[in-house]
Length: 151
Image (cartoon, rainbow, N blue to C red; front, side, top):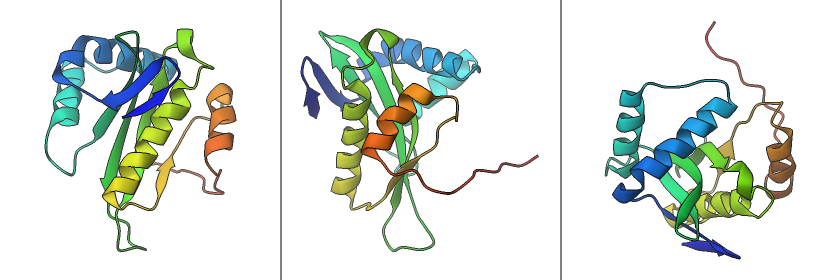
């Protein structure tokens, strides 16, 4: 569990479903997309499952209210013996941005990666996500890789 002034970063719990779902929907809206309710349910169940191949989740809580989330996955890498960690989703409610929530969530993933023996944590973001990129430039290293996907 990680703490910043007035906040706690902790593992997702079953009782967090409604607040998590609202945060994840807001995250998807930020990226101009959405997913049907059954995908929300499936993702939430996977986040709480015990399959080591599934994503895991941390949430940020302020005064008993969820204000941020991150989802991450450990996976093999062809160039190393250890697993690496992919941070897929990171979101902080706009009302708490600039208060260290995003940093605390990323540091929570860093701690989980360290505990799992994963020496690398990486993530992607949209080029237009300038506010988040200001944080990422302080807490990570921008790589020269360009992402391609199937046409």
